[in-house]
Length: 232
Length: 49
Image (cartoon, rainbow over all chains, first blue to last red; front, side, top):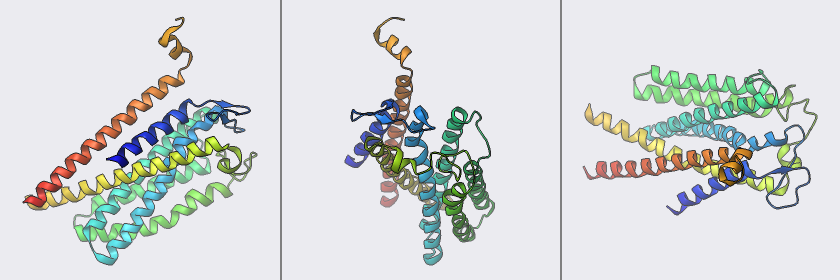
């Protein structure tokens, strides 16, 4: 219970600091954030949008990890863990797309611009959405788990390219693109120590939240499976 | 609106956003606590049978 209370307090702190702390030209107080060129007040999205994108990568990595584990041991619990990670990965990818899209409306003028970053996340949504479709199309449990595990391995091979490589080597609007005039990572060079602290706390609290959600989800899947088998 | 808490919120809309996000977070947290409790009860019941 203590860990859950800690998570609640951590996330509440990230919400309060991420939304309410002021962005000023020359921060002096411990609660002030610096102006990041090109982002200004809109930089606050970093505390919520980046962790959701980060979690989608973690979730898809776990989908593959438990897929591999299933192929090795043929334990259906590993398939349930892989499925739970897949579902959460899709939820966080959709959240990253929505938060990014709202930010794009205020920064670039429209919700969607087919920027390389937007295009890559859209392709990832299609790839992993297809895995959900594949799972629902196969009735046999073992066959579904086997196919899903193999698909998750192949699908994850594309994730580093679409998340870390393509948006950085192509010309685009998103911060960090090849033609970004404010070159250099936002986190290392543009944030002051206060902003970095809130950012890393945000990553930690979102990761803990994801882990808790994943545990609840896979337990629910396993219980549901067991109950349906008992009924049959 | 002059002065008072409502006047403050009217001039600082970001705090309304903050309040809404905190309420949403509290809702998610309570929902997860409740789900956690229910799952534990079901697991216990299934082990007992």
